[in-house]
Amino acid sequence: PALTAPDLRVLRSGLCAGLGWTVLPGYLTSAERAACTLVEIAAPVRVPTNAFYLVWAKSSLRHPRVALARDALIGALRP
Picture 1 (tube, rainbow, N blue to C red):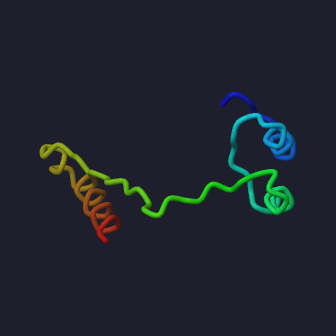
Picture 2: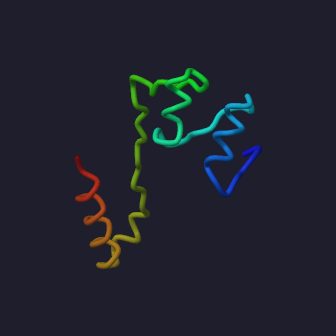
């Protein structure tokens, strides 16, 4: 980040002065968006997906606790 601030209104003022871009809640920018001082960038139509891979060493499954944890994770991550 090039700038951090303890108050989001400071970031909003910087945006209105033309200093880059940021992510702000809608309630802080509603007046500026209505006046076309700030422009909202639309969210992407397609949301990116993240794949998770559970990897373990076969020898570690000899321990009952490790096998139980592995089975619990697989059950929780299954769609």
